[in-house]
Length: 355
Image 1 (spheres, one colour):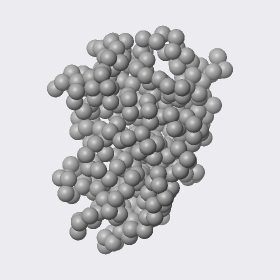
Image 2 (tube, rainbow, N blue to C red):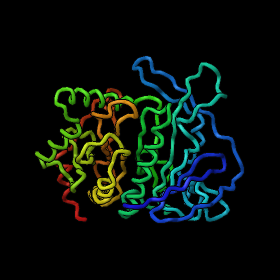
Image 3 (cartoon, rainbow, N blue to C red):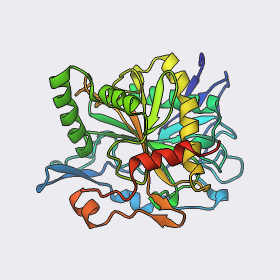
Image 4 (cartoon, rainbow, N blue to C red):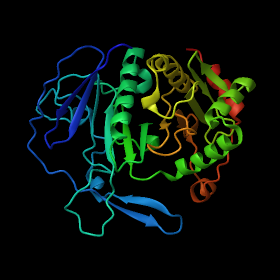
Protein backbone atom coordinates (compact mmCIF):
# COMPACT_ATOMS: atom_id res chain seq x y z
CA UNK A 1 0.00 0.00 0.00
CA UNK A 2 1.83 3.06 -1.22
CA UNK A 3 -0.06 5.85 0.56
CA UNK A 4 -1.74 6.51 3.90
CA UNK A 5 -2.11 10.15 4.94
CA UNK A 6 -2.02 11.04 8.64
CA UNK A 7 -3.62 14.29 9.81
CA UNK A 8 -3.19 15.43 13.41
CA UNK A 9 -5.75 17.78 14.99
CA UNK A 10 -6.82 18.73 18.51
CA UNK A 11 -10.02 17.91 20.35
CA UNK A 12 -12.09 20.26 22.53
CA UNK A 13 -10.09 19.45 25.67
CA UNK A 14 -6.65 19.40 24.07
CA UNK A 15 -6.42 15.69 23.32
CA UNK A 16 -4.73 14.61 20.10
CA UNK A 17 -6.76 13.03 17.30
CA UNK A 18 -5.21 11.43 14.22
CA UNK A 19 -7.02 10.79 10.93
CA UNK A 20 -5.67 8.05 8.66
CA UNK A 21 -6.80 8.13 5.02
CA UNK A 22 -5.87 5.97 2.03
CA UNK A 23 -6.50 8.99 -0.23
CA UNK A 24 -5.20 12.59 0.05
CA UNK A 25 -8.13 14.04 2.02
CA UNK A 26 -7.84 17.42 3.74
CA UNK A 27 -9.07 17.22 7.32
CA UNK A 28 -9.82 20.58 8.97
CA UNK A 29 -12.88 19.91 11.17
CA UNK A 30 -12.83 21.79 14.49
CA UNK A 31 -14.17 20.27 17.70
CA UNK A 32 -16.47 23.04 18.98
CA UNK A 33 -17.62 21.38 22.20
CA UNK A 34 -17.07 23.60 25.27
CA UNK A 35 -13.79 23.02 27.06
CA UNK A 36 -13.66 20.53 29.94
CA UNK A 37 -10.59 19.77 32.06
CA UNK A 38 -9.08 16.34 31.52
CA UNK A 39 -8.98 13.87 34.44
CA UNK A 40 -5.83 13.59 36.49
CA UNK A 41 -3.80 10.39 36.18
CA UNK A 42 -4.82 7.51 38.39
CA UNK A 43 -2.37 5.90 40.76
CA UNK A 44 -0.47 2.62 40.78
CA UNK A 45 -0.46 0.15 43.64
CA UNK A 46 1.64 -2.97 44.00
CA UNK A 47 0.02 -6.28 44.91
CA UNK A 48 2.42 -7.43 47.61
CA UNK A 49 1.42 -11.08 47.16
CA UNK A 50 2.45 -11.20 43.51
CA UNK A 51 4.56 -8.11 42.84
CA UNK A 52 2.10 -7.10 40.09
CA UNK A 53 0.99 -3.51 39.52
CA UNK A 54 -2.67 -2.49 39.72
CA UNK A 55 -3.85 0.79 38.17
CA UNK A 56 -6.54 2.65 40.13
CA UNK A 57 -8.56 4.82 37.70
CA UNK A 58 -11.72 5.84 39.57
CA UNK A 59 -12.64 8.46 36.95
CA UNK A 60 -13.50 5.63 34.51
CA UNK A 61 -16.69 4.85 36.44
CA UNK A 62 -18.53 7.60 34.55
CA UNK A 63 -17.62 6.54 31.01
CA UNK A 64 -20.28 5.83 28.35
CA UNK A 65 -22.00 2.43 28.58
CA UNK A 66 -23.82 1.00 25.52
CA UNK A 67 -25.47 4.25 24.37
CA UNK A 68 -28.05 4.14 21.53
CA UNK A 69 -26.76 4.73 18.01
CA UNK A 70 -27.88 8.38 17.94
CA UNK A 71 -25.67 9.11 20.96
CA UNK A 72 -22.68 7.03 19.97
CA UNK A 73 -19.50 9.02 20.78
CA UNK A 74 -17.50 7.21 18.08
CA UNK A 75 -19.70 8.11 15.12
CA UNK A 76 -18.88 11.16 12.97
CA UNK A 77 -20.48 14.42 14.02
CA UNK A 78 -23.52 15.01 11.79
CA UNK A 79 -26.03 16.54 14.22
CA UNK A 80 -26.02 18.90 17.20
CA UNK A 81 -24.78 16.00 19.31
CA UNK A 82 -21.01 16.46 19.38
CA UNK A 83 -19.14 13.18 19.16
CA UNK A 84 -15.46 12.48 19.71
CA UNK A 85 -14.87 12.88 15.95
CA UNK A 86 -15.69 16.40 14.76
CA UNK A 87 -15.61 15.55 11.05
CA UNK A 88 -18.75 14.38 9.20
CA UNK A 89 -16.94 11.34 7.77
CA UNK A 90 -13.67 9.49 8.19
CA UNK A 91 -11.85 6.31 7.25
CA UNK A 92 -9.87 5.52 10.42
CA UNK A 93 -9.29 7.75 13.43
CA UNK A 94 -7.22 7.39 16.58
CA UNK A 95 -7.58 9.66 19.59
CA UNK A 96 -6.56 9.85 23.21
CA UNK A 97 -9.07 8.13 25.47
CA UNK A 98 -11.32 10.54 27.35
CA UNK A 99 -11.27 8.24 30.41
CA UNK A 100 -7.76 6.79 30.32
CA UNK A 101 -6.41 4.08 32.59
CA UNK A 102 -2.90 5.45 32.01
CA UNK A 103 -1.93 9.02 31.09
CA UNK A 104 0.91 11.54 30.93
CA UNK A 105 2.63 12.80 34.11
CA UNK A 106 0.95 15.49 36.18
CA UNK A 107 2.28 17.90 38.81
CA UNK A 108 -1.14 18.15 40.46
CA UNK A 109 -1.08 14.84 42.32
CA UNK A 110 0.08 14.56 45.91
CA UNK A 111 3.73 13.79 46.52
CA UNK A 112 4.39 10.13 47.12
CA UNK A 113 1.61 8.93 44.80
CA UNK A 114 2.87 6.56 42.11
CA UNK A 115 1.17 7.89 39.00
CA UNK A 116 -0.39 5.51 36.47
CA UNK A 117 1.76 6.84 33.65
CA UNK A 118 1.29 5.80 30.05
CA UNK A 119 -1.17 6.48 27.28
CA UNK A 120 -4.54 5.09 26.22
CA UNK A 121 -5.92 5.60 22.72
CA UNK A 122 -9.10 4.59 20.92
CA UNK A 123 -8.81 3.28 17.34
CA UNK A 124 -12.08 3.74 15.43
CA UNK A 125 -12.08 1.39 12.43
CA UNK A 126 -14.82 3.06 10.40
CA UNK A 127 -17.40 5.84 10.40
CA UNK A 128 -20.15 3.19 10.06
CA UNK A 129 -21.81 2.38 13.36
CA UNK A 130 -22.37 -1.26 12.47
CA UNK A 131 -19.72 -3.85 11.66
CA UNK A 132 -16.35 -4.92 13.01
CA UNK A 133 -12.73 -5.13 11.93
CA UNK A 134 -13.50 -8.33 10.02
CA UNK A 135 -16.24 -6.66 7.96
CA UNK A 136 -13.87 -4.03 6.51
CA UNK A 137 -12.57 -4.43 2.97
CA UNK A 138 -8.87 -5.14 2.48
CA UNK A 139 -7.88 -1.56 1.68
CA UNK A 140 -9.62 -0.34 4.81
CA UNK A 141 -7.97 -3.05 6.91
CA UNK A 142 -4.60 -1.95 5.59
CA UNK A 143 -5.34 1.61 6.71
CA UNK A 144 -6.10 0.33 10.21
CA UNK A 145 -2.80 -1.56 10.17
CA UNK A 146 -1.04 1.64 9.11
CA UNK A 147 -2.57 3.35 12.17
CA UNK A 148 -1.37 0.54 14.47
CA UNK A 149 2.13 0.82 13.01
CA UNK A 150 2.19 4.61 13.36
CA UNK A 151 0.93 4.66 16.92
CA UNK A 152 3.28 1.87 18.07
CA UNK A 153 6.23 3.75 16.60
CA UNK A 154 5.25 7.10 18.13
CA UNK A 155 4.13 5.90 21.56
CA UNK A 156 7.28 3.81 21.96
CA UNK A 157 9.25 7.08 22.07
CA UNK A 158 7.60 8.15 25.35
CA UNK A 159 10.17 7.69 28.15
CA UNK A 160 7.58 6.42 30.64
CA UNK A 161 6.12 3.70 28.37
CA UNK A 162 7.51 0.16 28.58
CA UNK A 163 4.93 -1.79 26.55
CA UNK A 164 2.41 -0.98 23.82
CA UNK A 165 -0.65 -3.24 23.64
CA UNK A 166 -3.05 -3.09 20.67
CA UNK A 167 -6.36 -4.94 21.00
CA UNK A 168 -10.00 -5.21 19.96
CA UNK A 169 -12.90 -6.41 22.09
CA UNK A 170 -15.92 -7.53 20.09
CA UNK A 171 -19.27 -8.36 21.66
CA UNK A 172 -21.00 -7.55 24.92
CA UNK A 173 -20.02 -11.05 26.12
CA UNK A 174 -16.44 -9.83 26.55
CA UNK A 175 -17.36 -6.50 28.14
CA UNK A 176 -17.74 -4.14 25.18
CA UNK A 177 -19.28 -0.84 26.30
CA UNK A 178 -19.51 0.82 22.85
CA UNK A 179 -20.86 -1.13 19.89
CA UNK A 180 -19.25 1.02 17.19
CA UNK A 181 -16.38 -0.97 15.55
CA UNK A 182 -13.22 0.06 17.35
CA UNK A 183 -10.17 -1.13 19.19
CA UNK A 184 -7.83 0.33 21.78
CA UNK A 185 -4.16 0.87 22.52
CA UNK A 186 -2.96 0.60 26.11
CA UNK A 187 0.60 1.75 26.77
CA UNK A 188 1.90 0.65 30.16
CA UNK A 189 4.67 2.01 32.40
CA UNK A 190 5.61 -1.59 33.23
CA UNK A 191 5.81 -4.93 31.44
CA UNK A 192 2.57 -6.82 31.98
CA UNK A 193 2.54 -10.12 33.94
CA UNK A 194 1.57 -12.24 30.90
CA UNK A 195 4.33 -10.70 28.83
CA UNK A 196 6.91 -11.32 31.55
CA UNK A 197 6.03 -15.04 31.49
CA UNK A 198 6.19 -15.15 27.71
CA UNK A 199 9.48 -13.23 27.68
CA UNK A 200 11.09 -15.66 30.12
CA UNK A 201 10.06 -18.66 28.02
CA UNK A 202 11.15 -16.96 24.79
CA UNK A 203 14.53 -15.99 26.23
CA UNK A 204 15.16 -19.53 27.52
CA UNK A 205 14.30 -20.97 24.09
CA UNK A 206 16.54 -18.46 22.32
CA UNK A 207 19.45 -19.18 24.67
CA UNK A 208 19.17 -22.91 23.85
CA UNK A 209 18.52 -22.72 20.09
CA UNK A 210 19.48 -19.26 18.83
CA UNK A 211 16.04 -19.11 17.18
CA UNK A 212 13.12 -16.89 18.27
CA UNK A 213 10.38 -18.96 19.89
CA UNK A 214 7.63 -17.75 17.55
CA UNK A 215 9.76 -18.90 14.60
CA UNK A 216 10.07 -22.39 16.08
CA UNK A 217 6.33 -22.51 16.78
CA UNK A 218 5.54 -21.58 13.18
CA UNK A 219 7.94 -24.25 11.92
CA UNK A 220 6.16 -26.83 14.09
CA UNK A 221 2.71 -25.79 12.91
CA UNK A 222 3.78 -25.99 9.25
CA UNK A 223 5.28 -29.43 9.87
CA UNK A 224 2.18 -30.75 11.69
CA UNK A 225 -0.25 -29.03 9.30
CA UNK A 226 -3.36 -30.17 11.14
CA UNK A 227 -3.89 -26.98 13.16
CA UNK A 228 -3.32 -24.48 10.33
CA UNK A 229 -6.41 -22.44 9.51
CA UNK A 230 -4.95 -20.41 6.63
CA UNK A 231 -1.68 -19.03 5.31
CA UNK A 232 -0.24 -16.94 2.52
CA UNK A 233 3.31 -16.07 1.50
CA UNK A 234 3.94 -13.82 4.49
CA UNK A 235 1.45 -14.79 7.24
CA UNK A 236 0.15 -17.93 8.92
CA UNK A 237 -2.98 -18.50 11.03
CA UNK A 238 -3.30 -21.55 13.27
CA UNK A 239 -5.01 -22.90 16.35
CA UNK A 240 -2.25 -23.19 18.99
CA UNK A 241 -1.21 -26.64 20.17
CA UNK A 242 -2.26 -25.83 23.76
CA UNK A 243 -5.25 -23.56 23.12
CA UNK A 244 -7.01 -22.15 26.18
CA UNK A 245 -10.35 -21.34 24.52
CA UNK A 246 -12.78 -23.35 22.34
CA UNK A 247 -11.99 -21.10 19.37
CA UNK A 248 -8.55 -19.55 19.52
CA UNK A 249 -6.50 -18.47 16.50
CA UNK A 250 -2.98 -17.11 16.41
CA UNK A 251 -1.81 -15.11 13.38
CA UNK A 252 1.86 -14.30 12.85
CA UNK A 253 4.21 -13.03 10.15
CA UNK A 254 6.38 -15.88 8.88
CA UNK A 255 9.53 -13.79 9.21
CA UNK A 256 10.27 -12.68 12.78
CA UNK A 257 9.72 -9.03 13.74
CA UNK A 258 9.50 -7.70 17.31
CA UNK A 259 6.67 -5.21 16.76
CA UNK A 260 4.45 -3.37 14.29
CA UNK A 261 7.08 -0.75 13.58
CA UNK A 262 9.41 -3.38 12.09
CA UNK A 263 6.92 -4.74 9.54
CA UNK A 264 7.95 -4.16 5.93
CA UNK A 265 5.41 -2.73 3.49
CA UNK A 266 5.34 -6.05 1.62
CA UNK A 267 4.44 -8.04 4.74
CA UNK A 268 1.95 -5.40 5.90
CA UNK A 269 0.23 -5.43 2.50
CA UNK A 270 -0.29 -9.20 2.81
CA UNK A 271 -1.99 -8.97 6.21
CA UNK A 272 -5.57 -7.96 5.21
CA UNK A 273 -6.04 -11.06 3.05
CA UNK A 274 -5.46 -13.48 5.91
CA UNK A 275 -7.04 -11.28 8.61
CA UNK A 276 -10.33 -11.00 6.75
CA UNK A 277 -10.44 -14.74 6.02
CA UNK A 278 -9.71 -15.71 9.62
CA UNK A 279 -12.40 -13.45 11.07
CA UNK A 280 -14.98 -14.56 8.50
CA UNK A 281 -14.22 -18.19 9.36
CA UNK A 282 -14.66 -17.41 13.04
CA UNK A 283 -18.10 -15.90 12.38
CA UNK A 284 -18.97 -18.82 10.12
CA UNK A 285 -18.54 -21.55 12.73
CA UNK A 286 -22.04 -20.95 14.13
CA UNK A 287 -23.19 -18.42 11.50
CA UNK A 288 -23.43 -15.71 14.15
CA UNK A 289 -21.06 -12.86 15.02
CA UNK A 290 -18.42 -14.41 17.27
CA UNK A 291 -17.54 -12.51 20.44
CA UNK A 292 -13.78 -12.34 20.84
CA UNK A 293 -10.75 -10.55 22.21
CA UNK A 294 -8.14 -9.92 19.50
CA UNK A 295 -4.86 -9.12 21.25
CA UNK A 296 -1.63 -8.13 19.54
CA UNK A 297 1.44 -9.33 21.40
CA UNK A 298 4.63 -7.48 20.54
CA UNK A 299 8.00 -7.02 22.20
CA UNK A 300 8.27 -4.44 24.97
CA UNK A 301 9.86 -1.14 24.01
CA UNK A 302 13.28 -1.82 25.56
CA UNK A 303 13.36 -5.52 26.48
CA UNK A 304 13.52 -8.85 24.67
CA UNK A 305 13.32 -7.45 21.17
CA UNK A 306 15.52 -10.18 19.72
CA UNK A 307 13.44 -13.00 21.20
CA UNK A 308 9.78 -11.84 21.42
CA UNK A 309 7.91 -11.87 18.11
CA UNK A 310 4.86 -9.93 16.98
CA UNK A 311 1.72 -12.06 16.70
CA UNK A 312 -2.06 -11.75 17.02
CA UNK A 313 -4.03 -13.91 19.47
CA UNK A 314 -7.78 -14.07 18.83
CA UNK A 315 -9.73 -15.82 21.58
CA UNK A 316 -13.47 -16.42 21.71
CA UNK A 317 -15.42 -17.32 24.82
CA UNK A 318 -18.23 -18.90 22.76
CA UNK A 319 -18.22 -22.71 22.80
CA UNK A 320 -21.63 -23.25 21.17
CA UNK A 321 -24.66 -21.16 20.12
CA UNK A 322 -26.04 -19.66 23.32
CA UNK A 323 -23.21 -21.10 25.45
CA UNK A 324 -20.09 -19.35 26.71
CA UNK A 325 -16.94 -20.62 28.33
CA UNK A 326 -16.92 -18.95 31.71
CA UNK A 327 -13.63 -18.79 33.58
CA UNK A 328 -14.37 -20.98 36.57
CA UNK A 329 -12.35 -21.48 39.76
CA UNK A 330 -9.37 -23.22 38.18
CA UNK A 331 -8.98 -20.60 35.45
CA UNK A 332 -9.85 -17.45 37.43
CA UNK A 333 -8.22 -18.24 40.76
CA UNK A 334 -5.28 -20.39 39.70
CA UNK A 335 -4.73 -19.48 36.04
CA UNK A 336 -4.87 -23.18 35.18
CA UNK A 337 -6.98 -23.62 32.03
CA UNK A 338 -8.99 -26.72 31.14
CA UNK A 339 -10.12 -27.13 27.52
CA UNK A 340 -13.22 -29.06 26.43
CA UNK A 341 -12.46 -28.88 22.69
CA UNK A 342 -9.36 -30.39 21.07
CA UNK A 343 -7.42 -27.71 19.15
CA UNK A 344 -7.22 -30.01 16.11
CA UNK A 345 -11.02 -30.28 16.06
CA UNK A 346 -11.42 -26.51 16.36
CA UNK A 347 -8.99 -25.95 13.47
CA UNK A 348 -10.92 -28.44 11.32
CA UNK A 349 -14.21 -26.65 11.99
CA UNK A 350 -12.66 -23.31 11.06
CA UNK A 351 -11.17 -24.69 7.83
CA UNK A 352 -14.51 -26.22 6.84
CA UNK A 353 -16.40 -22.91 6.99
CA UNK A 354 -17.64 -22.06 3.49
CA UNK A 355 -16.65 -18.50 2.60
